[in-house]
Image (cartoon, rainbow, N blue to C red):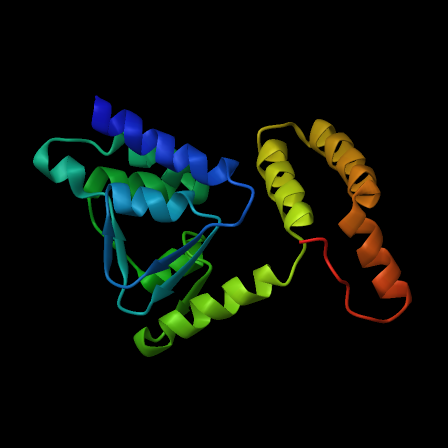
Length: 179
């Protein structure tokens, strides 16, 4: 039980962190590894990568990975993975939304760092607000989600970096963030 509790804590922590978490996959991500990829905010994979939940084949259904997969993939795709243990290729994972991007193996580090550096150019406070809001609205009905996110946009404008971003846009210059 301890192992599964710890794994669950890691997976849920990813969504609670105020910064984006990027998975870089180069090979087989299986069971909890596949769950980790599904739990990350962004995932970049090499063309040779595969994603699987093979527990069913040894008598242990991947129940905890199913939580993340069921929230990242279409239901029928997730269930086929869980019921058969058969892997998804990198291209299939991209097509179904498990990963954000697939690149040649020799470009994996470069592409992952490119995304990371692009994110690092943004305001930390705005990213934190945006990430928290994104995940919060996912559990709400449509009307509630729109009401909540509209208020968050107003709140965002009161942040120092929100004001700096608007001023920089008007003045046609790059913003200088508070971090």
